[in-house]
Amino acid sequence: MDLGIAGRTAIVCASSKGLGRACAESLAQAGCTVVINGRDAATLEATAASLRAATGAKIIAVVADVSTRAGQDALLAAAPEPDILVNNNGGPPPKPFREVSREALLEGVVQNMATPLELVQRVVDGMIARKFGRIVNITSASVVTPLTGLDVSSGARAGLTAFLAGVAREVAHANVTINNILPGMFDTDRLKSSTAKMAAMEKVTPEEAAAKRKAAVPAGRFGYPDEFGKLCAFLASTHAGYITGQNFLIDGGAFRGTF
Ligand SMILES: NC(=O)c1ccc[n+]([C@@H]2O[C@H](COP(=O)([O-])OP(=O)(O)OC[C@H]3O[C@@H](n4cnc5c(N)ncnc54)[C@H](OP(=O)(O)O)[C@@H]3O)[C@@H](O)[C@H]2O)c1
Image (cartoon, rainbow, N blue to C red; front, side, top):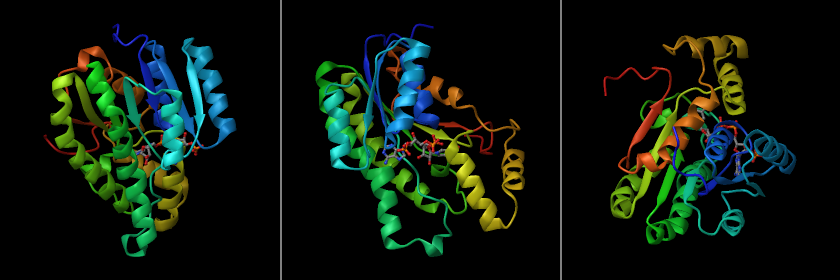
């Protein structure tokens, strides 16, 4: 399927690895110019080289902390008029809720709520003026189902979701859509480290913790990042112009709800 976005420009935040990288790759395969981002320069440059070789697309690497104003400035300097914005960031580390300090709480809100909202504020009017915009936020299954120890993540991302639910309806008239993808368990570095921390909290080995997590997924496995990236590219496509304000849970059936 031709996604109809060849020649468009995309900013994919926090995309040198994992789910962000998979979104960047799918958008590059669709013919977009893609700004990728991460804080570690060597990892980011290696990813940029790999994406260029795999897709032939123009990939612009921006080393920056997306949670900072300077980092956001650098991303927008690389692509002042993005057609597509994929919001992503690191997530708060797992921690028993009683031990979450005020600083950690605020840090989680900055990372997973304020940062994506600030970027939306900065790009949305240009999208409206150009009558095309696709904003996709990587949130988490924890928005709809509680995960022990990930309470800061759940709360901040639920706040982001609620905030943008109204905004999505305000900008839909101009062919600007805002949607969220909620990953369940995908095989990334983040999943490995969160599994290791959960193992420590539960006093089991990382292998035992991983097996327990997989056993809770009807698909019987963790997700492949490419499966996530493909959904992101579809939501960014011309075909998805009538889909907005929605939450797409992609979790191998782990969430046991009819709706
Ligand atoms: N994987 C899952 O199963 C899963 C499930 C639910 C939710 N999530 C959420 O989805 C998001 C992506 O997870 P992932 O599994 O893809 O993680 P990952 O494999 O650890 O990759 C994270 C990426 O984000 C970059 N990054 C982190 N903090 C950044 C910052 N402040 N500024 C710029 N780049 C930053 C990292 O590069 P640098 O470290 O070099 O900056 C890396 O490229 C996270 O918020 C995570 O909590 C993931």
